[in-house]
Length: 123
Image 1 (spheres, helix red, strand yellow):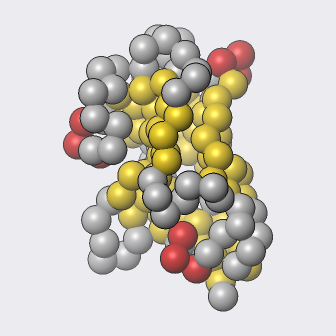
Image 2: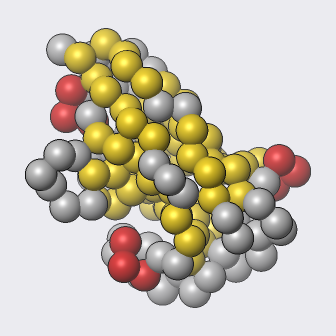
Image 3: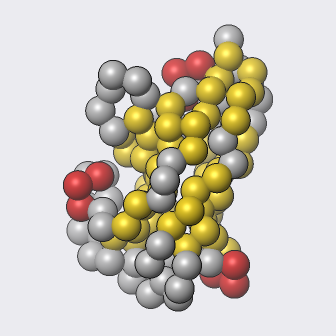
């Protein structure tokens, strides 16, 4: 599975963005997919995750209630709707895939990675 993330950009605080992650091939129903982000000088952190089969979704406390993760199986695409955005959301956002999905919060568990897309939120 190859992943391609896009949709980042510059937005004012309170605004919104939708990130997309296109998965090549045919993701299996058990594939876990996640969004992570990494700000300058900080560790890569978990944002949100779901199973490709749908249903179960997870969020970090810092984005819960503001971000929504979803996927469109017909388009092989995962999304991250973000609003309202805050300056502290500024980071490079990565999408990732894990065939085992045993620890969705741990970026080290993920096997497939997209190239990252930059989100900048101005105050």
